[in-house]
Length: 343
Image (cartoon, rainbow, N blue to C red):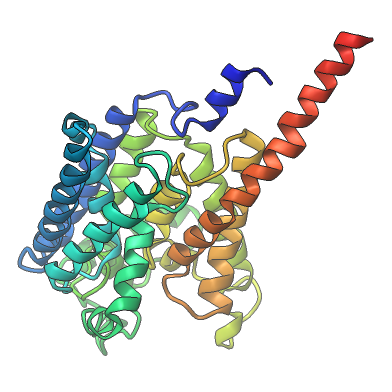
């Protein structure tokens, strides 16, 4: 491999169609509309959490960049993106002060202590989420009281939301009638939740729209979340209910996709170009591993946010994966080329 090729291999955004700045601001838009949907049903608590995270992230990033005379790099939007993705992973009722502390940790420790954008081995937002959850577990769990982890008594009752009847009737008649299936009443709560929860789950309709925008504008590799979700959904359908006394092929895939941060993990964490493999083969393997690991942690490990832990686990394995990529893919090609030159 030439020096130019090796340098290209190390660049985190090299295989993406859009620039880092364009990609970051698209992600910011998609994250913001998700936060906005969540805020409509919680008296704008979600927006307060986002404001705390973004303010702390931008200020911390500015202090680090300004010290090196690079404050202009703030406009790339990466600090805002990390803060907004962190916000999606946080409970809507958590104090903005915890979000701010996590965002500051995100910028100072995870991002800049490793050299800045593209040099971090851990996804900054996922690492900050872990920092908050284990630094203040009581506050994190208290903010989720009454959430779908331990549903309120009325979650499974018909008509939990006033608009359930008309929307469900339309969906069952226009879409699900072709499959012979029918959505129960309570499923509308997944798309317009009146309960506490992480912001990504409460704004799931806007998040779905955001993922379409990301794919349409080629802001990421669309096949990465496709691989991740294909394996996650297959295994969850196959054995998702078994740990709870269910039967084989009885897992509730719709519930799994709409809760626990599954879509954020697939579209924003698993496809992060900085904290992952570089070759297409390596990316495919890590996406596959992420989907399977998310199922194992959530279903067999009984951890509701297994998708986020799976993303962190894959990040931890990334240095080893990159070493294997170099040894198996690139060094092997160099040896083949060298042998051809001397033959």
